[in-house]
Length: 287
Length: 264
Image 1: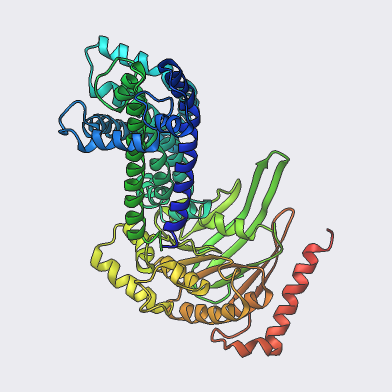
Image 2 (image 1 turned 60 degrees about the horizontal axis):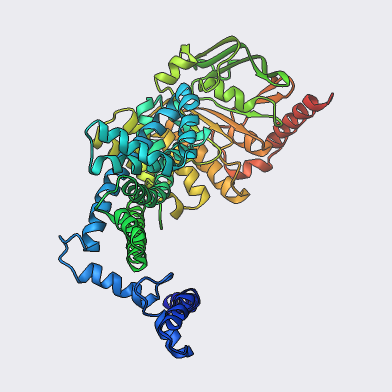
């Protein structure tokens, strides 16, 4: 109960501010409507109208909730109007991209830690790759892969992996380098091979860092998949839902898609966090 | 220099030099170190910081490579001896893996060296008894006190039956009472196993209490200034520290340390 109360208080504050903002932002349109129909505007009528516009500047919370409910529960989940179906399309690309990106990040990190040449050659490129805005890269990736005949899930997964590998790379390099000189000396005193040092010392030491970066990475992977759905006029996925919503001024649809994406990201981070807790506890690293 | 007739030399150093190249120019960590350590000796290295006592222990362990002189361990080069797993090394910190139990930590070098599972279990049980930690094999390091953790790290160094035990200020981070207790336990362990022990310390009483030979070193350049063969019997109760013989050796060590500092 002690934990729930503050959360509820914050949520309540957000909803109140949101309603206030919705009234204020939707008011000009409501006033215009009244003036056009020659009705003398009274405040309750105006406020009632700001809550129920079809294309509000800022939809009221209950409108978004209704949009979410219609999208999730009101459709067959195979329907193109179902948010569950769109979320699944995005999620599959997210997970594929997350897998590719994490694996790439971990493999590059292992190379960087063991090879001076790789340390000096790969890291600057990895950093450079992240300074290019993903919105600029995404259309290029989609177009180039499409011209090579690759469409559908893979191009989105590539963009997703682009955002995923970097935090995993940085976290894993940091983690693999945590063993101190004394622990490496001990390994040397036992004449341990490089592989033994890796599997028995470096990798277990790196796991807490790896999990922290995986949590960042999976949220980034979702962003990558959504961005990957924006450029090509895709018809499926949360990104496509956002795009078509903005084409047709369907703000309720946009907000419903946004909330679905946020909930999806939160769920993914929670799942990684749960795997982290179980793994570290079984290793005796978390008490 | 032979402390007892008949004992074979295990470690022989002749004119060992070690110079580190640093940004501020060369640092002479060791200069012309001559020393013979015989089978079953307990040799302490004592001296102020920077005298090269730890560096010398590390060259024996082939964790550092001398830049001059000859050093042989078990009749081979130090590096060949390391590869033959001739010694167990104990650092100031226990360096136990938090994700392994005490038994798992002791098992680590045994796994690396390819001992069979049954052999590992037998050895772990034996060395845990040896350091008086029987029954603690299933605990994680954080569940043990600092002194117990250090005993576990000694057990780990003993597990693969190397004849040489190299200890770099192993009790330096522990309080006086725990230290006394561990010193007694170490002497008992040495008597039971007959290991050759190299022991780095800051503490004069500790060096005198434990050693058959005390090597006094001084810095800039790191070198040996005195080697004292202890006349104390091998069996030593803690009370021996109040005898005139003990105090006489302690006095000589202190003089040696002071002489090394005289022209600073």
